Length: 199
Ligand SMILES: Nc1nc2c(ncn2[C@@H]2O[C@H](COP(=O)(O)OP(=O)(O)OP(=O)(O)O)[C@@H](O)[C@H]2O)c(=O)[nH]1
Ligand SMILES: [Zn+2]
Image (cartoon, rainbow, N blue to C red):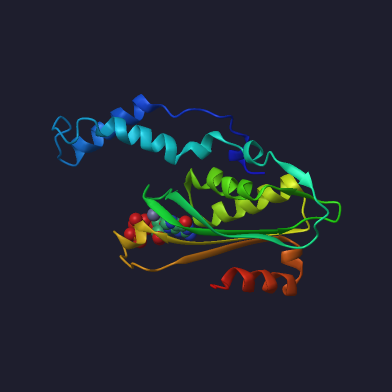
């Protein structure tokens, strides 16, 4: 469990964001009263509320549908689109997550859509990709107690493309393996070949 998981749902302080965005506009030499910008602080506050809504959620809020299915093989959801915010520059990083797990013999499984919702819980926070990847894996281990979990995230970071080092197209790939995926090379490579199969 990470510290962030203990957070109770809480709305963002929209007024405070509005004041801050107005200040930023002034600081960059813009006129916050001009037509195009007058409603910008309010828009940014609403956008941030959505972008950072995961701070007010816990994995248990989305891993609600849990059933026992007697399925002991791998369940893998590939290419879950994700949009997150780099905590260093507050610009987006985006890409896909692949989430797989092997339920225990008497094991619990969850609805497929819940895995995608879980990715959003952690993506909609200021993040680094490595932490996001690990948090999704840990949440599944905690809530479903499967034999193992594998999470792979492939993403492009705008902080590396639109500014700074400026390397468009560079993709960052992170993985987190838990349980049997960590212990068994064979199980891990089976999962990786399914994940990397682009057909
Ligand atoms: N490991 C990791 N690094 C990230 C992630 N997102 C952004 N970064 C990096 O965080 C680092 C921050 O470096 P700093 O030197 O403090 O900031 P900076 O001067 O803006 O760095 P540059 O981006 O190189 O211009 C940069 O190397 C980013 O590429 C992430 O998800 N994971
Ligand atoms: Zn960044």
